Amino acid sequence: KFVVGLGERVAPTDIEEGMRVGVERTKYSIQIPLPPKIDPTVSLMTVEDKPDVTYDDVGGAKEAMEKLREVLETPLLHPERFVALGIDPPKGVLLYGPPGTGKTLSARAVANRTDACFIRVIGSELVQKYVGEGARMVRELFTMARSKRACIVFFDEIDAIGGARTGGDENGSDNEVQRTMLQIVTELDGFDARGNIKVLMATNRPDTLDPALLRPGRLDRKVEFGLPDLEGRGHILKIHSKRMNCDRDIRFELIARLCPNTTGAELHSVCTEAGMYAIRARRKSVSEKDFLDSVNKVVKGYKKFSSTPKYMVYN
Image (cartoon, rainbow, N blue to C red):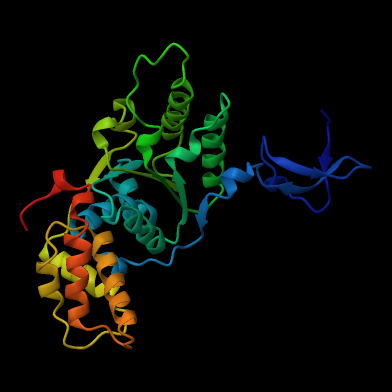
């Protein structure tokens, strides 16, 4: 350790306790403040300064989007409303629902609207071989998030590390996963609700998550992304076919009626497969018959592989 002074080019207000700095070798004076040291593995996680997804790109989840905007957009864009009322906005939100219903897409759209940095973390990326590595990555992840002006941290597939704690086995193989989850819980308790960080978590299995993660004060809101209704399916088909060269007389409402209990990802696959039929026929535009054939192949042919029977509703 050295006792050093400030260089001529550095203002006292630029230096904070615990900050990394660059020091001149001869005079041992501080020349430049340095950013915090972040593990390259954490830095390479999907970080987007501003996602290119807007609200117009999200379909079939109108009610869920309104709840998400209320929790995330209002605190980041209009924090004075919460200050005037003397309440703290929610720190975190849990997005749950079947795969392919637009949970990740909605989070990116909110980040675009708020001009926030978007960090996406897959739950399995935090499961490390050595003791303490996963918890260290979580600490550095939130350190990087605090350095941004506004940041949305999105934990996808959180059930990989956020499962309910059990007695475990004799070898303690689950202990490292539990340490990582407890570090996330500690970070959620550690930052200010009125700060610049908002936490989103997504899962297909909300029933398997640990109660300590779900309690109010950590994940205050639970937003369900269900299967889209008839109007939502038609909207999703129009969104995905917007960039396609299609015939003008295509009845998207009819196609939506032929795709009951389907997710947005399956409807995207319908549009892609319709384009493949046009390519096989060596045509330059997609016809309605291509969409009908695509529905028979994608929706009805792959129904036995569907992972959403428990979410099916009559719509």
